Image (cartoon, rainbow over all chains, first blue to last red; front, side, top):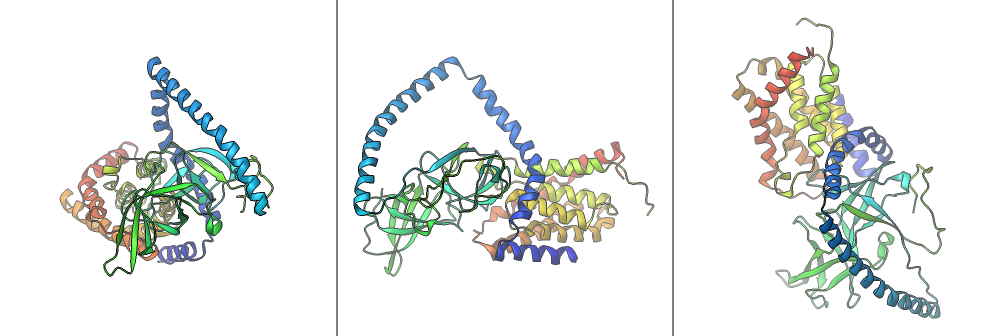
Length: 276
Length: 162
């Protein structure tokens, strides 16, 4: 009986007041051997397949990456010129923003949590200054945000989680909306758009930066269907996330560069999550 | 019942840790939904076999561990496992003498209660999609029970866990 009452009290505290982060973090530390027990053999298999991949595949991959690197360098040349111009124009408008966010690569643990929850666990935690609400991206787009932090690992809620919503705007014309996760796999929904709003198939959605949680300008999803609801009061758009949410091995953690905040470097001494 | 000196706690612990590891072992998406509830099954066995040693308290602690491992609401699995343990504690003496198939049916019913509680809490605190696949671990658990029973019984006898 006591157990049931205590469990209900815990659940209420966790759900309503979010007061148990410390408790959760310490239990996570206690249980991290179990997580690594599962993660290490699988990571070992990855390592083996890397180690024993043939000379030829490595050469091919090297060539491909080299080519890609050169292409990206070429784009970057233009980008830095554009960035300088952008900054100059913004200074003229007196609204300078910093564009450089600091990022850190984190490895996704080969650990599965509840299929109903759409979360992943990464191997960086408060020791690396991860904080709750931190944006997680991969090379192609936004992955999600950190919801629990323990000293060595963090839990990331994916943007496709039905309980998750992310403020976005259409890259083409700046129409703002909110992309909500969906019960269907790998789909985001933009509910309650005005019927005349200009959202089309193939539109890229980027983070709008509103709400102050996700930094501005990261790609989120691509619209693949727009339809009106039954009574034609609103239209709904559906979008596929650009990030490869299902096959991550590495993700990037983003520290938004706020003008009013001093740049923080990761230290191994702090055990407190860096507050926003 | 004769209370003998407790021994072999580490085998109980190891089997529970393995069950937890199996719970977070990544599976391909196509079969991930059909993962049996390893922790609940192993816990059920130990409560049935050693009700004087494994009981509500251990179930509760194990539930908290599961909550953290699965990223669930803190207390969700604790509640469900506590109820599960309570049911098994009350029935353990009877279930012990049942034939396998009858044990399986009982385990299936207890797992049903366990999953119903979990789903109820999920539904109260977030958005869930109802699928029939959600209930598949109940059936799977019942089907797996004889094997888990035999495996853990052998472990218990060989190492004289009492």
